[in-house]
Length: 155
Image 1 (cartoon, rainbow, N blue to C red):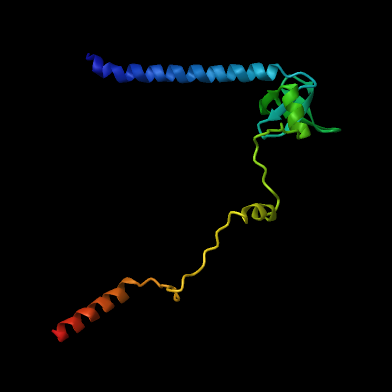
Image 2 (cartoon, one colour):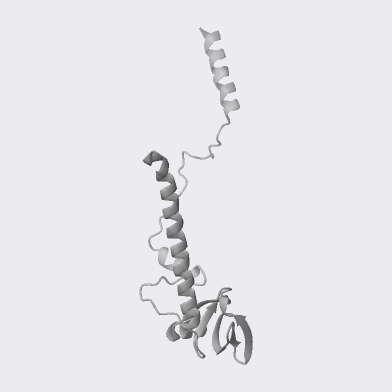
């Protein structure tokens, strides 16, 4: 057999091996993450809801989604176990203050006051009394044909 004939099969087997290996790594990491849950830790579900773990059972987790509101979720529904600082920041709504952040005003009145000084007023010149309307192609053709007819009869 020729090596060129076997090369695609060897390549295909190699790609399949790498894909299954990375999938197993992701499953292992997800299992480790779910096993690291303990009461009091903050989590994000796969649906995007943030809650605090109250009790960890064999296949389920009891979450406190709001003060006094508890819900039971499957362990597979937990998307991420969060650091305590990150969970507190997300739940309390405290966003870090960035000194370089852009401040967007609620209305445009504050924007126009600063820009009035550098504004240049454009006025209509006297030689442009009418607005030039664009001609369509058919009107231009008729006008050009009329010029040719007049030019031909005068000569």
